Image (cartoon, rainbow, N blue to C red):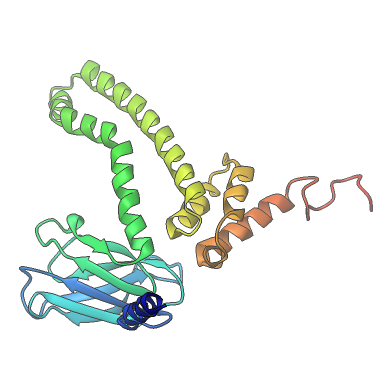
Length: 256
């Protein structure tokens, strides 16, 4: 009984140490080598659909660190823009403590961690790099050869390289789609899964039944995100246009 009490007490301490409450986030950033006073901007896609990014918050780097706090009701993609740096750091803004370690020399190698969806986002990207490695390796190995062929107008070499590249591209494309589906099927809580199925349903040739089955397996919290709701709307629209499907409009000649 005493051991149980100690265990419960330790758990209470762990929970009380959290810096955020419900629907709150805190981004703790480390930016070694970046000068004091440099600006860090939190941005997201313009919700009006007009394109471009809008600024959500702005802070300054102090002693190689920065911190951004705020409220958020559901996960969504955001980016961090550092002053004088061309590339942006993409991540998922969601409730919790998000850690971002900025790599000033290679911004794409910045590290993101701390919350479920960001950890999943990092792991998913690493797994996709493995799937797409063959295509990237081919590009790296043949870039110089292609440039030389274009300069000398060596059409035979250009055609050969393009044909080989296309074959690898198709192979990688097939494996990538398989990876997307496998991931969405096995991660019913992940925001990435909702984005995958939402994107899948934009393809007229998509397997709607498969997409619907995966969607039905999602956690309710994921279904209630914007992509989750968009999936439901799309499935409803597709099913309503299929003769004989539940909720479908009656076909000509059916019961009046």
